[in-house]
Length: 251
Image 1 (tube, rainbow, N blue to C red):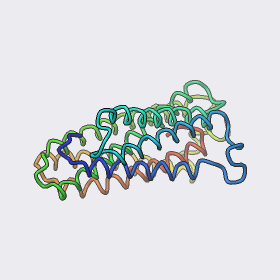
Image 2: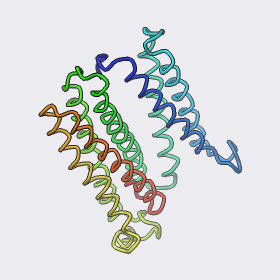
Image 3: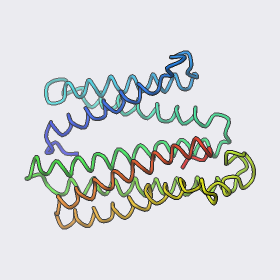
Image 4: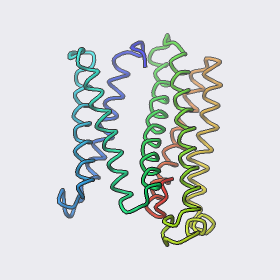
């Protein structure tokens, strides 16, 4: 994003990120066993998240005030810590799975974060045109392009995961050939189809509508669509994580 969005835009996004990571940290540590209940991979993920949280809080506290020269380094540490936490957590979740499913789980976690982050930031930027009406519409168009790109990547990853789940032996809660196929065609499979409908098809259509409204410089309409878009993405990704725990397929 350009600096034209103003200091408050970056401070707001940094503060939101810090709050969400604090919530993640609160839920990451088991209440019964504490840190001792974490595996070594989960411990690394937790440490990386703590580093990322400290960096993003530092950025939030200093943006527009001080440390301008080292602020890019602070952002790099924050993003790097988050990236490490995602990859290591994916490795912990997929421990014992075959290599294809491990790689798909990593790709699923990364593409999920990109889609969620891009959608949320696009929604906030759309709202920011009410704060700064003179803000160039090209910024919204640019971030919507990134959102569409992340949407395409996410669909590709989920498609690959479904293909692997249908073909590979390790897929599914029963760990047998065709178990994932039986799951998605059973009554419980409604969660899979909701994931596809709300988390992939819905955002795909809504992101295209956002792009079309952004092209005609209708920022308020684009923002309204992005609100709905963000909601469908969140619902879809929550269902994806549920399906990962149930079927071991990284949707």
